[in-house]
Image (cartoon, rainbow, N blue to C red):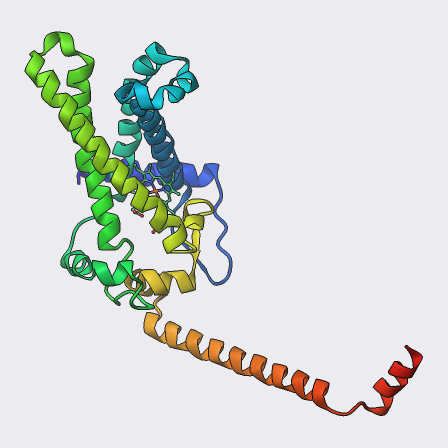
Length: 275
Ligand code: HEM
């Protein structure tokens, strides 16, 4: 990417870091700075506005109830392309912001081959080579990028249909809706991944941080690059710590059971007679 775009991105990060704070406590790592979070949620808001207004236009029969949210049918129609334009603008900035960590590598092609194991949580840890984003996250990003371009071109052709041949507008409708389907499918999976499937991920887009445990579990190469520590060693240490905790808990429970089963001592006999 051009150095002027990178320079713009660096400066924007700096400006936003002054506007908002990210507190990183012990045992946590900074994942998404304020600028990234601002872009992500701006993209998300305008995506949802475009989606909901788009539904109302696409099928008034099914989604008539959505139009009043935007001030009625004609206003929904008028607002929809503008929501789309703002979405595209924010996504362009996000594209510049994430272009480098989203670059596709061989590691990602190998990740895609393990997709099934990933989806079924077959292994407790990601492969050691997985960096800041995994192959699935990159796939989603590039799907948005390509559908975004398709949206923009077809959207403009539909918007300014007076100057375009009728068949071009008709084909644009088909591709506009196909792009929407791709984005919608990706969006549903994305919400599941960012919340229920990988607990501890959602907070990274709220307060900007993740726990070290999250980092060495899901993005070991990134953990190593940031902390300089070995992710497998961290995992083994955590496993030993949990085993020790479990042993201590079992021991305590055993003692409580013994105490309950043992004959009453002088003290609790006294207590019983008082009761
Ligand atoms: C509204 C519900 C949404 C939630 C709960 C959500 C949650 C998240 C979270 C937690 C991350 C950070 C993942 C990480 O650091 O590993 C993330 C990243 C990302 N989000 Fe969202 N997001 C939402 C909507 C959207 C929308 C509407 C878009 C775009 C149309 C989007 C695009 C992305 C992209 C491209 C990434 C980076 C790659 C990835 O993690 O998949 N998100 N999101």
